[in-house]
Length: 139
View (cartoon, rainbow, N blue to C red):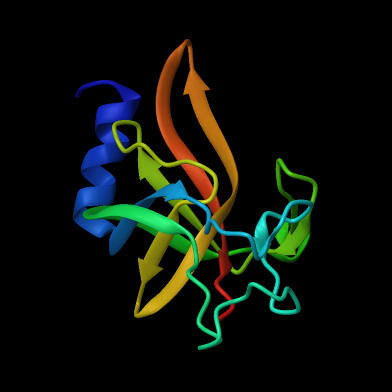
């Protein structure tokens, strides 16, 4: 019958949803990046004249399968590791062998989300799955 992790992986492959995972690489850089928030500041004199400041960069797209569900009322607000409280829209359960981290981008059903919270489910020292809380990206 296999381990719990293997059974979960088979379940996800059979009944899961296709998502695209992009590993976070780096934040935008330049003199116009606000040091406190580590984000482009459009009020800075060095902000690009076009108004199109570069956003974060991500690694290559990775097609994976996950169990994606809307979050419950008690799970909507998530405190990120960097102290922000954000509203999660979805939660995705990834098999044990998929690497997912905070700030990664997940595209599901044509919408981009970013990973704002992570959890793992271990049974007897065996990692079964990773749960990612996803907030919709703001354009």
